Length: 104
Image (tube, rainbow, N blue to C red; front, side):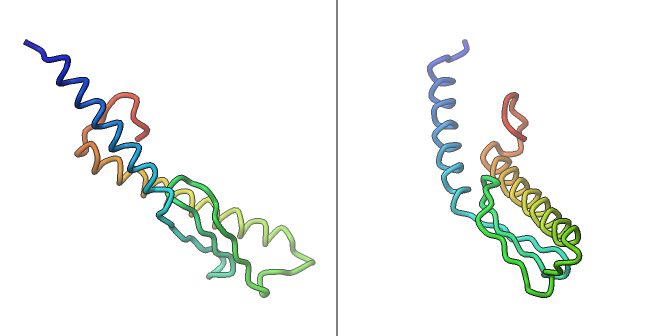
């Protein structure tokens, strides 16, 4: 016979572990660069942008579009790394099981 109480307990434990993991992701950081390091960004595991550093050499008043492209590339790379970090943590939590409704 199926034990609904046990299932509810397992669900509650999973939710608690996910909440803890989400909090931990807020403290983990990833860094990405573009333009050979001309633009550096840091994000946390929740895809929140923490900082942007731009080298003086990357700032050319006559070519703002290049700087915009470098910033965009660095931010997108950082978001990809942050998502990968999050997905890896979720996979560890679920043991690689794909659970419907989970964000991976």
